[in-house]
Amino acid sequence: MNESVLRGFCHRSREWSRATRGMELFEMAATDLREFADADSGFFVYRKRVLTNGVTPQNPTVYASWGVFASDEERLQADVDQALGQMELLHPLMERWMLIEGMPFDLQEAWKEYGLLEVGIWPLVSREQMIGAIVVARTKPADRVSVVTATALMDSCAAQVSLALDFILTGRIAEEASHRDLLTGLFNRRGLEAQVPQLLQDCEASGNQLVFGLLDMDDLKQVNDTEGHPSGDNALRQIAGIISRNVRVGDLVARFGGDEFAVLMQYDKANPFAAMERIRRAVEEQSDGLSVSVGGAVWGIEGDSLEECYAIADERLYECKQLAKVNMSV
Image (cartoon, rainbow, N blue to C red):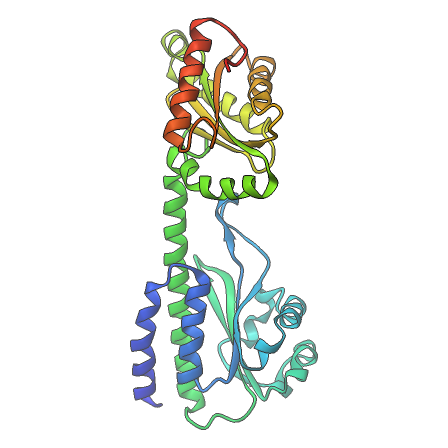
């Protein structure tokens, strides 16, 4: 075993902890594998996990391909869908180098046109579940490292990449949690603010206006005082659900704290506040005797920041409450 190669690789792989995205990590690892593992071709397969859906893995996707695999990534993805789609079935073939002739017929058929001599597949594991794989290949015999060294190096690589992916996911989960309201699951103010740049771009592309809407649950204090705080919490969750069901795909709903909710939505210039009135009526019609007061402001016309739009919408909401009106004050 060439210990100097392993030491060099382990030293280099420490840099992978700097990666903040999976793609960045895969590109760093691919560069080092080309140099140390004597693998002239390869790619990563990763089942990206969706935080908003319980960290559910998506379909296996190809990342950071190099060598013969890089010439046609669309074809490579199709081959992966066919041959590696059920990665769990490949466990008996993993963590070792194999000649193409010794692989199952389906894999031979998928990869024979790449001109490969041998292939190695190493699993990426997180929380005891397989989330991807590293596929490394050679089109000619290795001339710098032995099979024993290359195998030990790949074992280390798979462990390091798996660990780095866990760190990245943990950071994403923490960031996502910091953007969410614990009671309702909606965005909090910080989470809503983070989405504003993308919404402004979408409005510019569509020609719509970005409307900031503010909603305040009426008489939350009375509910808390007479029925208890659990009933008040249930009322807030009920309103959050009604608002979420009555906005369009792409509109954002947030709880700003207490009894206050906010929405950011694209709307046509003819009647930018129509959606707020529709939501107000929906709360009255679909809730257990609850109601909200509403206010709003048009971004870019009445305010150029969340703070400015909030101040205008809050003033209108206050007028609505004071005058005991149910229509938005504009």
